Image (cartoon, rainbow, N blue to C red; front, side, top):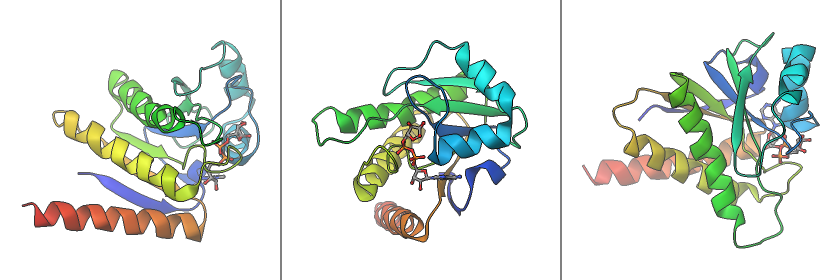
Length: 176
Ligand code: AR6
């Protein structure tokens, strides 16, 4: 499976699509959303305004404008309160983003750790959901070539993803 890890700023990456951790108004904000809007330039906000917002757990696509990435997929993660539906809403963000990528015939996608910043989702729980959902989607779409990169902004998130991915690899190696 083509899963990679990258440590740094998502706006620096060339890919068919980068995923934005957006809000429901698609109005821009802080964190990765702010960085993407700054790097993409004002046409991104103009394009977002035409999309009529986005529900939690869903995703919408725009061009990447001044970004190196061709497209931005705006996914809205849940705010973390410890409620029952939050894991499935977060998983939906990853699944819906990948479904959009496939619909647009995109073959590389980069995810930040959706909801793990301002929305308060505990990093470990959010990254387990991210990895499990992406792996399940890739397994269900073996006929479709796509490389997935998890972009970690901090050393600590990189370490968490790295540990989880190597556990996955050990498990799948021992099953073969
Ligand atoms: N590149 C990659 N990852 C980043 C970057 C970057 N440039 N900047 C931050 N991160 P957050 P959320 C990481 O808060 O929790 C916005 O205001 C960050 O370290 O960006 O889904 C929106 O408008 C963290 O691990 O998104 C919403 O209102 C991860 O990205 C709200 O924040 C997500 O943190 C969304 O909150």
